[in-house]
Image (cartoon, rainbow, N blue to C red; front, side, top):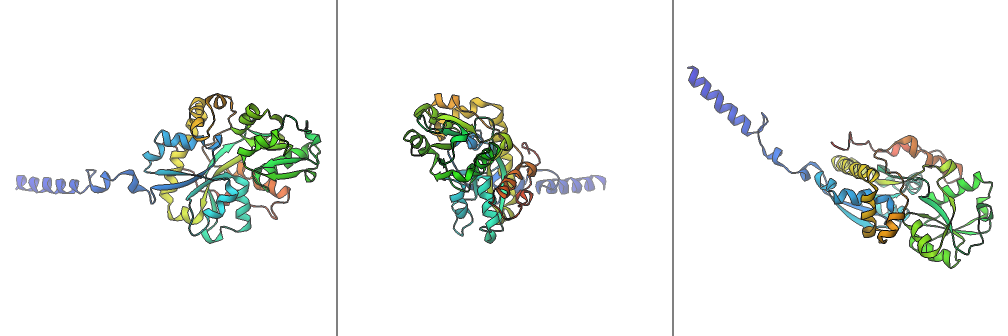
Length: 336
């Protein structure tokens, strides 16, 4: 009987192994990474700034592909314009990059209530010295910060992170920001506007800081990320609560791949420099001169809370907004 029993047991084990119950191959084991996410194609809204180098690096290095994601990049003018699209019924985006103030402002106004609010997927960029600068034109009458009252300062959008950081630095220097006129224009127009004295100063991010200095002779007036705004969280990646709830595996996969891109961008400047001529449309010489900020790999409520607190201080919020309520959990580690 023993040989017969042994034969039966052996056949049964082989059958179970073939079904994948004992670690053997099965259809689910053979499934590719795209089967692990709810949505394999991510439509991501981006600006052509240094801040997003890690996304381009993650695409180039195949980090998103390894997670089963195909990231489609869509150019935007800024978060202020992209967020209304993000929360619409026929949105062009799944995730949008943008300055934190625009996200907090939209959340406070309730524009995303129909999609369960706005949520932060990842922290994108932290200001370092000379990466968030107010420049003056070569012939501007504003030669120092105390001469700004009565002058025009260009910002990408009013009621933005640019305006908050400028107001903060002006306050520390006893300059009345209410005597300054903020003028909206895209980064790409600011250098020429400074040269022609259409504005007296402008707040720019890289690579536009270096480009404006090199091409138009713009000079540094003050660092908008200094004093109370030193190492200010500049921008991050946001989605809707509805998208996050319906696509948790997709969000986690995006976070893991993105964190790898952030770590790679922060660890090797040369990789960032090589990418800039392509997506930021600047020459290699300018790319070699740009100042880089920080590329954090985790969302931290204590750091992000600085933005709504500044907004409250300058009357852009009526009550305190808790940043932690908008943060999606981080992946366990970039390698998982």
